[in-house]
Length: 212
Image (cartoon, rainbow, N blue to C red; front, top):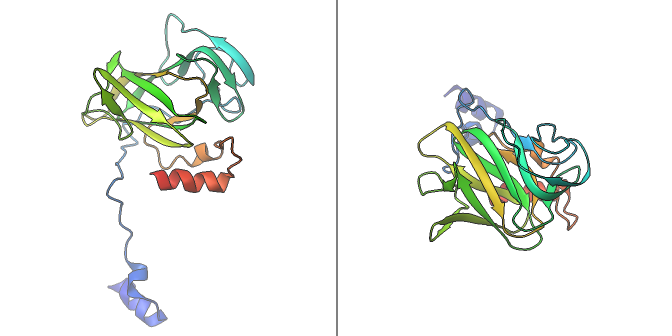
């Protein structure tokens, strides 16, 4: 009421002072329970890279180690690291990540339609834990990458927990910018994203926000 009276006094529309509403598709994130940070793959900021040499541009041939640390990305096969992203050079390359969260998203790009198979704890996702970009075919869970945007991979209805995510990339040329866990709203990731079609930072920002 006080805000409405102030609006009337100033000659403003009362609705200008109405509280903002949360969009219906927004998922609430409990930061106290979220244990995994936004993770960068480009050489400018990939200091948490689990195998290979972090903070180094160029090609690297990578193998999984015998043991893994949580909250660190592990890659297999041949990858090219640029400042902004890591790109697989061969089909069948994989990304492995041990996380503790209920949501897993990724900022990705591909110049051609690329299928990515998803495993969690060694088995396909289900309707109870798959993000909205995931599809199912026979016994596989997978999603397609085409263009630069946020891809929603995991949304666990059971809540927060520790799991191992593995992405199996069926084509070469997937650009992996970040993996995030529901943090709002990937603002820093946008600083490093671009497509090979010379989309500006502002243009890519609009494209990603529109996709959500």
